[in-house]
Image 1 (cartoon, rainbow, N blue to C red):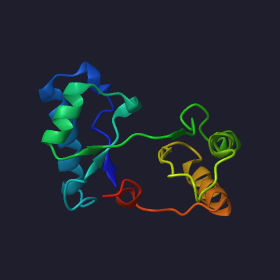
Image 2 (image 1 turned 45 degrees about the vertical axis):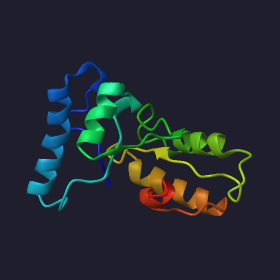
Image 3 (image 1 turned 90 degrees about the vertical axis):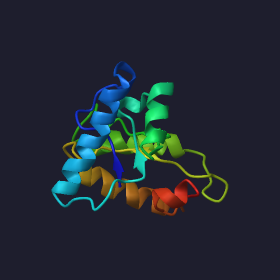
Image 4 (image 1 turned 180 degrees about the vertical axis):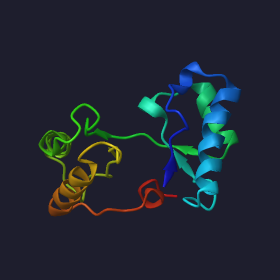
Length: 141
């Protein structure tokens, strides 16, 4: 589980105080709702965008920033599992699981068809010989 900000802004256009607010507001609300027991270790910056200030604030707040290596573009074609799978297939074409360090896919659970794409992607990558692991294990933490 990771954080992704409260309002999904491009953090490069925010002050240090605004960046802290974005991270703390989401964490505090999800703890209040009982979704999280504590702040997660990871965060993905909206749009994959960050700068030195964002990196500095994330380190200050004890987050490890994580970005993706496969963009399923599910945000561009919500509900179209075929299009999302084409991006997985294209990105993994020619890779050999035993020689590939792995990958992190950008996948939005809130998009229409997100569950279907996740199911299809999990089946596909397993059939290709990949093993699903936690983000901790993927990053060697």
